[in-house]
Length: 428
Ligand SMILES: Cc1cc2nc3c(=O)[nH]c(=O)nc-3n(C[C@H](O)[C@H](O)[C@H](O)COP(=O)(O)OP(=O)(O)OC[C@H]3O[C@@H](n4cnc5c(N)ncnc54)[C@H](O)[C@@H]3O)c2cc1C
Ligand code: SF4
Ligand code: SF4
Picture 1 (cartoon, rainbow, N blue to C red):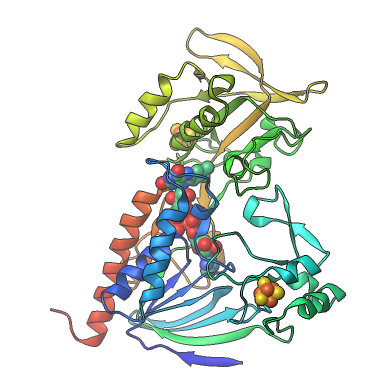
Picture 2 (cartoon, rainbow, N blue to C red):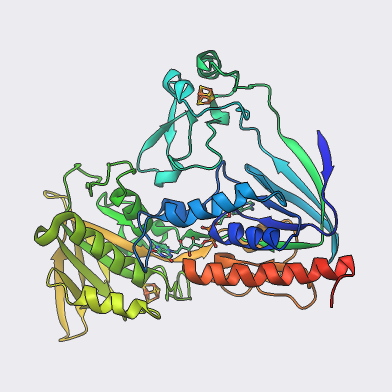
């Protein structure tokens, strides 16, 4: 089925993370018609997967909730989840866009009661927890998900499990006949806020992420630290489920490396300082953090945060690019090998858990966009003077923290508004 909506004065925002939400809201609150597309079943992007966020260490729900309230109150904004752009044609100021909507199999009558989930047996890796736990085949992506509506995993469609889910629903909210839909829309400008993904840690072979159970990534550590995460907020080792209190953080894992990502991912120094804070908060004097670094790149106000962590006697900083990690088979401890460049001595240090401060790369590979965009060497979207109506927002334009992503998204919204104003002949 295909439906046509919107006009060439509409602004289309692709990606419903903090950047896409910001760009969409800023434009909608200026009175523009905005359509926001998110490929996942809920909004929020990767910020919603953090336990806390710097610099204030607040819970991500604070910022997201404010945006959701603004979104619900704004009639100019239409949101589609499970939605992806499949084709863009036309010219700046007048694009024709095809959007594919995947079926959720659950309609607006869902009260998020959870009965369907209880009725279903099949379980799958929980993508919200980076595969650290399992979720049911009928599921709410996470506790704060917006929309608060369950999803039936397409892998159970047509099975007994799907029938059981439907039978368990007292609200008539499950519609197993739902099919993919196609929307056709007009847009004057498009903001690409498709964000980032963690670099594939298994590619950094000397660090053994794919071989050593107790080597994990920083994004996984966020989920372990979160009381709503797979371990209820306990930092448990994947190998034996024991609490890890002596934790090493390895900086520049995959970044600033010509074999992997050449760029500095900018966030990961701050993220590890924040993680040392989590360890402190959970264990007090019983916890130990060791940060292996080349140099610490802490930005702006964040330098204060660095100074504070540095003063903590339970956090040590080892100036070294870790060469390799092996595993002590008996204890399951990863053992870090390298040379401490302050004093030039070799070390072989065991820790209970190792966290790779993994690099950030653009979530959409350069040739996977449904349209030609100007992409730089690192894969980030750049403003293309030849096409004045495509804009990047947030982490699709560079490795940015939330603060910078929001500023960047606001600027992109403004540029998109200028385009649709020109189309409407209201400029100046
Ligand atoms: C370990 C770690 C910890 C961090 N901690 C902090 C912190 O404490 N403070 C801080 O300021 N920053 C932190 N960051 C950085 C923060 O996560 C980013 O700044 C933020 O996620 C950028 O938001 P975004 O909306 O640009 O991208 P994303 O969060 O990646 O959102 C992009 C959205 O677009 C969607 N999308 C992607 N492709 C498509 C498509 N084709 N169609 C439709 N939708 C699509 C995605 O599903 C996603 O919802 C951390 C990063 C790491 C690695
Ligand atoms: S689909 Fe039905 S059973 Fe499942 S959570 Fe929604 S209302 Fe409850
Ligand atoms: S922010 Fe820090 S850990 Fe991340 S790449 Fe840059 S220097 Fe390395």
